[in-house]
Image (cartoon, rainbow over all chains, first blue to last red; front, side, top):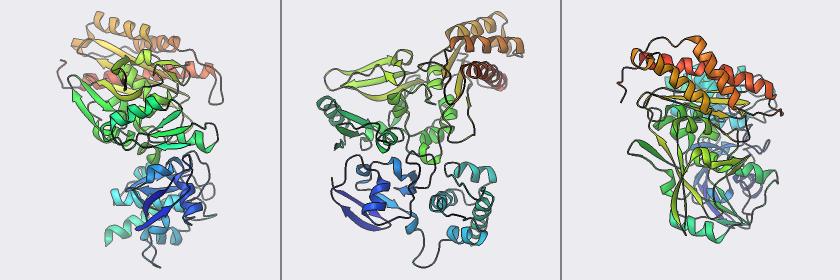
Length: 156
Length: 294
């Protein structure tokens, strides 16, 4: 099966995709975009979170064929060239990263939250990130990073 | 494996009839897990994601016709007033990433006893609209739709078109037990609905029997007691003893098992507690509800 879709603003076309393959596999193994991580493969951990037509989804639960003709944005597409997105900057500054495996998914989920809710309350942050598991940092630094990014974005 | 991608409902029904080996996929939140873990290898995937008709909902008489492909996220955003119980339950489904993809039709198709949409749909008195290319549409009362663990009354050539849910005429509540607020498969779940227009009570039990089911004795009991005490008119206090007796009857309607998520005994206990609390919450809402009963 041939998959054509737009990824991070660029048209992509890959052939010989198996019908049962996930969007995550296509992104990582066929398009060379390893930002979205492969962990649970059942939608529990959120480490494969990407945008599909502007909505944050678990790429492991999207069949590759379902992405045909759609727009996908991965964590690789958030920065402006070498300049990190404010959410990414805030993760670095707050030390919201330990092993880093959950980071891409959390960055996309936090990015989506701040697009929809520029000044989220703590419960709103917690609910928005509830589908992203981190097994290292205990989440406090991650919450700090989201608060910092929100503050900076709204101040602009 | 083939990937079938109809763009209209009639095309979807034709493909369903032609390919009995195809597995229907909507949001993929159940189906992709089975594929990723090698649990299923269907001859084809029948992707319903491009069928625009399935993503629509409209008010049809005194019911909402909810297209099978409407996501939980949209139920929460768009249907909180008409279908409050289903909206509450939808908010407890998975995570934002799951709710934006997962559909109520998919929950019905999977027919897991733990599916979060089932209890509020049962409590509301919903029916499932299914269709085939050969025989057209038919309506299956929800109580008859579930036939066993992850089994339902859908014929091999049929697809789920919509769920028909009576618009709420009174308060509805949903409770669910799990180890945390997010990403939880229910250990047990309960939904109740007050129907002041016909002085009835609806119930739905999840994760505590081979299929989702109602608690008919509890419904009749509570409706009778409310009627007898004139509480529908007076909107007086709901006696705690009555709520407790209701909870006991709800638990008596369940037939849970011990499994990795919890014991049968805990499920029965939690159901009695959830039913008592849910009906107290619903009644408190009814007392403060300024809308006139129809």
